[in-house]
Image 1 (spheres, one colour):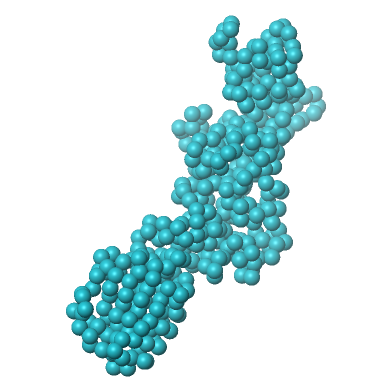
Image 2: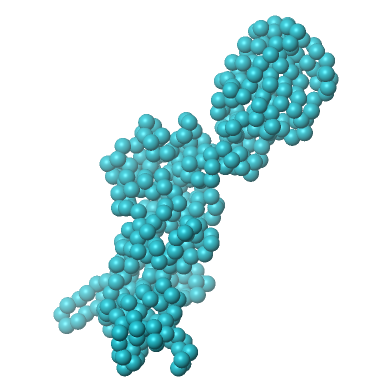
Length: 427
């Protein structure tokens, strides 16, 4: 008999260390464990091989999660040695039931030893077994509480209990998923808010970071941003008109969009920047493949986190997929400043302009249908020329000149170049 190798392990007698060896082989490329042979390869035998056999089979069945028994086979050799053949499992990572799927409970084979797996190895195993859908993957952490979720579900009159966990996607095969992590009080992701004194967002006025369940993050963030949403008053004759800097519903929809659609496989936080002229909502994860910003604006939506979106939909926090962004633009329909969407490969940003950050004359001046068509055209094509606007609106040069000058004064567009090189861009 050879000494221990990458695929062979010897144990002179039964101990609970055998569970770690089984886990390591199942998580790697399989192997053999011989119980009744010492580490020098000498058969010392078991005093009661039948009793030891029973202890081994029952222990492996009860101590290891997920169920590994279909990959484990036993043989009694010469009536004194138990041979345990372990095949590589298909539902990795396997781990000690009392420890959970984290380094203290997950083992892999490294040379002739079984060692604790690193968090990166565990994530890779989960990804290989569960696929690349973050919210459906098994969570590395399993010790969760759901006090904030219980309050949120109760507030909106929706039942929330362990029987509903599987239906919602909070559990899979009796294990908590990453969706459970997001809804739990132990959620590792946060929302950060920075309030700045200046337009370039370099001088801090205040900052906050909200953590815990995303239900708490949503509520805490909405409440804090309400403090940043000032009211401006105008008096015309005897009539006083009060107007918020930002539509409250627009803030709510922009935040919900960031929470529901961000890529939680990144560890970074949602970032909200506020200054006197705008609010920026920045979340990790660009648009899903095949979608454009124009698609988003007209209401097309492909949720990155479908089960999370379904939870928010059940609670009536979102009405239906794709309506949030469209509703934001509708709220700004008659505002001289329009929301802006910016997308990179790994980030999504929506900017809400301060509706009161303009002279009173501009702030109350509505957009004409021609202005809306020009803005939509520039948003789609990036720019527009005199000829393109004339053809788009079927107007003459005089009307073109007056219209573009008015839009420039309203700070809706900027004019670049002269003559035949003149281009109109979004301000």
